[in-house]
Image (cartoon, rainbow, N blue to C red):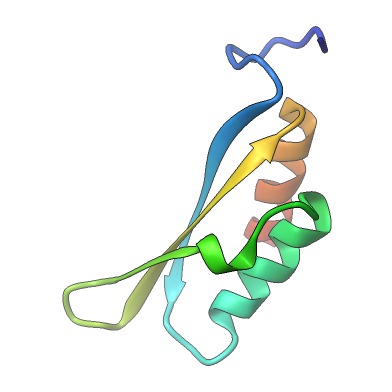
Length: 80
């Protein structure tokens, strides 16, 4: 087991959440990033939730996280 400053115990189920303007490639861009860092993530399990006006989309990908570094790398790439 990896020693980190994280309160999480790895491996663990961890929801990666992203929200942005709903556009044609938004979900695919999120999936591309998540799969690059968590290749075992089943894309068919992605959860989508549109905003009340339908302008924004919330995307949740629950991965089996193996380290805090993995989570940090995913969120860093999502922010970019």
